[in-house]
Image 1 (spheres, one colour):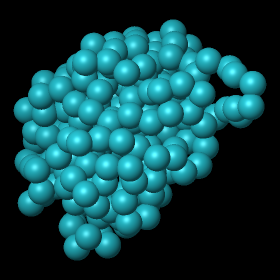
Image 2 (cartoon, helix red, strand yellow; image 1 turned 180 degrees about the vertical axis):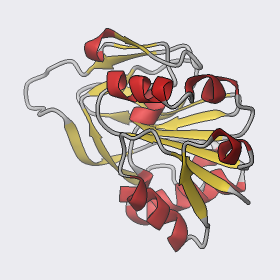
Image 3 (cartoon, rainbow, N blue to C red; image 1 turned 30 degrees about the horizontal axis):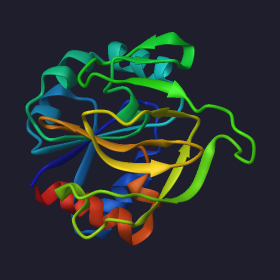
Length: 193
């Protein structure tokens, strides 16, 4: 099984690679299209702004490859958000793979933003096999509302999509590589699907 972590230039890729190594799963970190096209599974991590991520994907000539790949792809945090049509953050058009918009959390009393820390996720999808009700680690100020492609939900001031799926594209809002055992189980589930 060849696993490739797509190097978007805006994520801490080493921690994701270490998490995979703990599962005895080798992986490569690359933005080389030939190497990516030879992988069996793709991971698309992202940290920072949607605008910076999209700029980097264009500069690295990755946008078209990601939009058209038939390989299972897992977007992580910002990597999930850019699978949608649009992000309110800096009014940025994104990859338009799954029809959703990323929006800023609504400010509510008793809640601080960004949503940072451990929170419970509920899902019956195979990606979350053995994980319904597990806690994952989140860091985000923008979220995706529940929609037809939501496969896991979480609540922080409002219910939001903790995970999405359309065809071969999956996304998780949390950081599996920072979520201890639950995160490792999720990564293992994705690799074995």
